[in-house]
Length: 179
Image 1 (tube, rainbow, N blue to C red):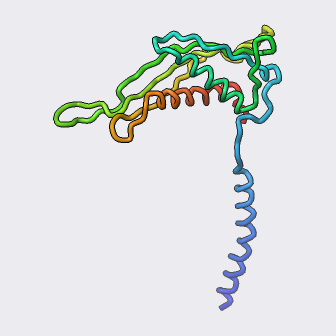
Image 2: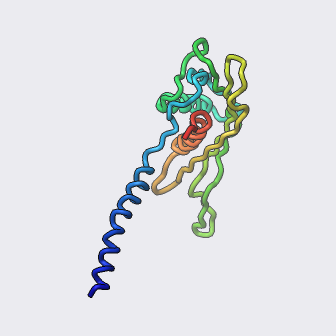
Image 3: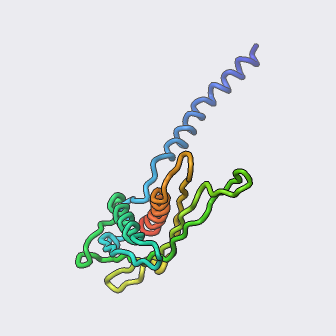
């Protein structure tokens, strides 16, 4: 009988320890943001001119530039301004646009493409306009997105937007990653 009572006291004493451990672990799990507000002040005012298009894909440079500007504005770490007010510039060019077969299937002895993938590559440079060292130079970023043919079809435009979103996440990571 004494053995059972002693065992109960020992396990009861462990409960506060377990609660404290859980509270410490849970306290460390929060929402993380790349926009902590600790970005160098000289980077805050950025001009983003339209990207150059070194591909045969029309208007891709406009789509990507507008996606980057929108993401920077939404993130709110940097402020997108005109060239006269800027202290930095994020410029570059779209260097690749590929549409390739992603998945195929055999139907009645014939091969059929079921899904395509859009692959986009850009090279970006972020430079300080005061003549200081570049934040990064000719950084190559890639994005891809898939679209499905047939049942549940999606479009090439949707895949382009997915690819652009990947590139935008990388851009934000390069500029404001500051965990």
